[in-house]
Image (cartoon, rainbow, N blue to C red; front, side):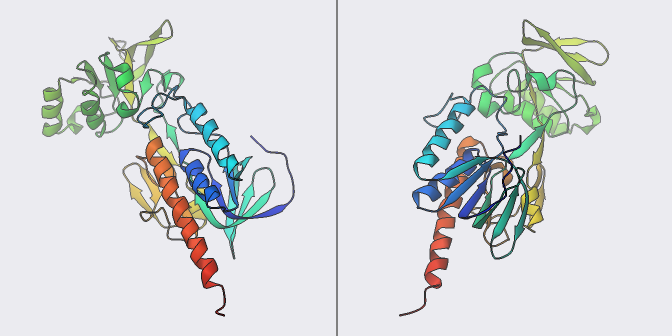
Length: 316
């Protein structure tokens, strides 16, 4: 997606890169605080494959696209501008200069990066086509909707044992397919807990899925055996979209789920004026959490701008 190419430089008080829950929430707070704010939205929300989102009080079951459309309407009421474009580069001098893919450069005193992350699925035939339908990753997001069905869990690391134990809360018919994990990698404690939860363990690589009437029907192993399953849980590899943060020199930290910026409780990075919110700041930010993080960042930014302006006023 490329916006119409224009050559111009525009000045804002705050630029928010990312139009998901975190970015829109930050923009809403800033707009209501009368800050000239721009949201740059490439239109690639992480939860696009999901038909509905869950666990957000008063919004449980709402389609993600509808949720975002309402958010865009709300920020527009307060004068926040939104451009459908992609931020491809950023520099920092007296302010932040953000280059958009369409050729436009926009500037701001403060910058919020809320670009989220991308889920990279294991290379198993048929997995991507069913992701968000009956191939799922989060039991808190989808467990209730598929409760009491025959679950499978695709292991990609020994941590997949934890996922299998978690989903057993929603079904007592759970099979852990070890796939790329060797049996010897399971600890004695893993085996004890899996047994206590009633989780069956099947060694061997998974080659693909079987589908009947556009529904998951089974998991097919490389040796030809097929296990009937109705739902398959998988842990995608999280790829944080933090390029803009690292280009500006923000300090990062390695976690089990990827490399993320070091932020304080408000979302401030180690670079003055640079903020991170939502899944750009951490892996476990569901929609409701991301909105909260955006709210905190927006309020903190407004306070910083206010104090900076007041401190710049000479004494009478």
